[in-house]
Length: 330
Image (cartoon, rainbow, N blue to C red):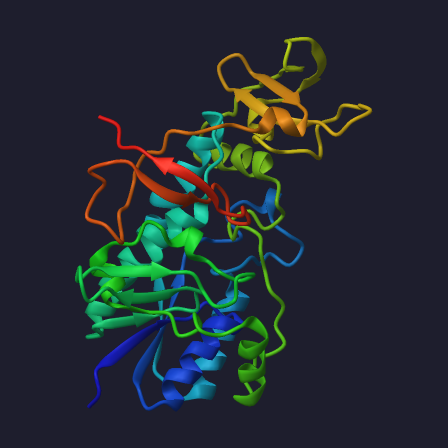
């Protein structure tokens, strides 16, 4: 029998097309869905439907329907404990410390690839396949696996996959990396998949209503910790008070909407201080910086950085990469 491939099935269009494609091409596959978060756990911040993405009951149901339609074995694995420890807890801690976390990156690094590869091993699968828009190739000169952006730049997800290791890349397939989203939608129709017309979802799966601050308060209470009653000043770049707020964790650098301040020109959050509970706002130009210090580096194309290198840097998912000099620090 052909080598088994474990397909991460979220119940969405992309992962469903991956399963159908691999099955059509004669691969031996099994579908696995990771149950990550109980949407009913914090009812005060749940949506009307009680569902989210990646881990709602509706999505599990959709993934199961697709697996039955395609004709492959299907399993649901509960990873709620690991997800809370590696994604939700750091998310809350980072926001309360005045930083802006990227939970999808943590999920990919510690759950969807790390834990999922362990699940693949448990069912005898050597390779895994996901619906991410990215590409992997092996450099014949260095022998290293390299991640490359997807053909469809509007859907490229490599920004969220920086934490993958060489071992993980060597066992991962991204069948959609060479396709555009319209092509994937067309395949979903061609395969007559039950989710062919399912809408995209962009929210964080465990914050389905989009209110991060309310989620953090509800989560802390659920853990038996009463959230601190915080308030502070909103000031301009010169320190002049422009208003008051109910907690610096309600704001993130670059934010423009919801500041609660009337001004002639658009204002942006340019800094937050979780200790003094001060939020500093300014113009778009005030946001600009000439450099940054990066930590927790994961080298993919290179084994390391012995000397400064000229690179393109992306500081958020939709950021157009900017040329920069990368310099190793002690």
